[in-house]
Each structure stands twice: as structure tokens, then as C-alpha cells.
Image (tube, rainbow, N blue to C red; front, side, top):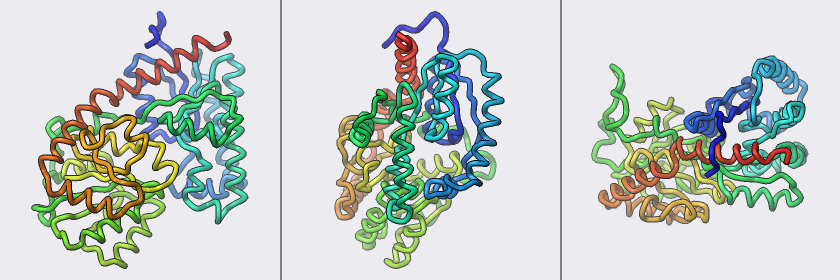
Length: 399
């Protein structure tokens, strides 16, 4: 680890990044825990998942979007003038457009620029099928992303596997790439005994109809890489096992597909709940016996580790997710996480049955997983990793 400088590192965290997104919150909180002074120069641009989908499928080419963007940048520039001196400018996720403005500002101050790329907007568009429905817009996104990646002195992803994918996708990319794992905010996702007491009137127990059941929980944004169809096909195979019940929490692109499949296959073992705030979500995780990860067969399924993996394990729950090289790089199958083949409904159903039948196995994996996550992937660990990367860049910049 690099030795700290005689004064704290000062970072300007810049852009229209999603301030309530786990990745940005953990990166900023982690830096602050590492003793870094973080000044946020932020303006809200994105209104929700529907707004981002509209923008990515061609809305970003409309005059209305650019009027919004210019107004947001005008407000950001007013904030930026009050920032004062800093050592490095960091563009948060998503920053595919912000990084162009940030490059100019960092250059004027003669400071290094880092972009937390985190996800390929182009690959996200491809996974969601927009390459077929909006081919011109997606091709343009690919071109813009390729140019945007040349703006910073350093680009960040969440795993080295994803960084390798970017290098293959953009083989002439001159920008160095590094990685900072997603990790978990253990102050929020913790074991029941360490959580604050429930507020008056707040339900904390297991619902009556779920008692004496094996409670399987999925939560998320119903993205293609989550393998929603695979999850529901597995539950279709488990309909005779009435003790196993799946609750799906969240909303997103494939939510309607999930509801349609559940109705078509008459899945009485699946219930749906709209998106919950974090305290309510944490309560749901506390009540679950098995937490599901992602089971798709897309790029993001194979090169990233989903936040719910870290979150569930931090709470001492057994997490069952899709097998991949990146999972085996950072976890130990059967010891601190449960894995099954990606996009394999039969394999997923069998893995759920195995865990459902063995409470001691669930307990052992959950306890091992919690210990392992707390020893390796907390805010403190993520902040130290990110801080080291920034210090190295600052010290080498201009040499």
C-alpha cells in the first residue's frame, strides 16, 4: 500500500452521476473513511430507470434531452467555481457524457481525471435488445463510448474481468484501466442483532402465510443479466415443493415478463412486491432463507459481481448465484457462497432443493460468507483500494 501524503488527498467527485446508486455511495463513503476529503460537484439529471432507458434508446439525441443536459451543466459549473483546489477529478457513474466536460476542466487545472466507467452503456443497450430495435442509436453509443474512454487518465471497472472485456471491445484504447470491487455498506446490510430496533408500527416478523416455509428472495431491477426467465422456470420445476416460496422484490425492464410467465405457468409459489426502501428491503433479507443472485448468460453475468451477493452475505444469508470465473476468483463455492450453472433452470432448481433441505448447510455458508465479506469487502476495504489507486495516479501525473 502506498504511504499516505503529509496531507489528506482532496477529490472533486464530479458529474450528473446517480447519487443514490450503490456504486457511487460506496465509492464516496469508502474514500471518506480512508481519510480522503471528497467534495461533491453534482447535479441531478436522471429521473429513474424509465428515463435512462428512454435516453439510451435514442432520447439522448433529442433536443429536449440536450436542453436538460445543458441546464444541468450550467448548474454544475456554478458549483465547480466554489470547489477550490483539489488533487484529482473523479467522474461518477454514469458519466459517459460528463467525462468530456470533466476533461476540459481537469486540463485547465492541470489535474488528473479518473472516470468510474463501471458499466458499458453500449453493452447494456445490447443486452436489453436495443441493438435490434434502435440499431443506429446503439451504434452511435458504441462510438461515443469509445471516444469517452479516451478522456480520462484512468478508467475504473468493478472487476479485472470486466477491464479485460473493455480492452477486447476497444483494442486500441490507450487509457489504462483498473478496478475497484463493489463491496457493501455494512452499516446498512448487517445481521439482525446489529440492526437498529424497528420503529413503532413497523412489521418485523415473518408474515403468517410464510411461516414454516423456505423463503427464497430475489430483489433487483429485473435486468436481462439477472436471468429472470431462468428463475421462474426453476420455480415452475419446484411447484410440487409447496414449502418453497419465492418473493420477487423490485421493478424494472423484465418485470412485466416475470408477471406474465408466473400467470401463464400458474406459479402459486411466486409473489411479487414493488420496490422497497432500504430499511424495508433489509427486513426482507432478514426474513429470507435463501437469497438469489443473477443467472443470466450475458457479458455482465459473467464478468461482474452483483451488489446483492455482497449484501446478502454481509447479512449472514446464503447467497445462491450463477457460476463464473469472476465468482471463483473472489469467493469459494460451497464455503462462503453457493453457485449453479448460468441460465440453467434445472440446475438452479436442484441447488434450491439442496439448500432448502439442509438448514445447517445454509447456516454454515451464510456465516462463512458474512465473515469473509467483513474481512475483505467493507467500506473500509473499498475506500483503501480506491484511495491507493488515486494516490498512485496523483503522484505519477505529469512525470
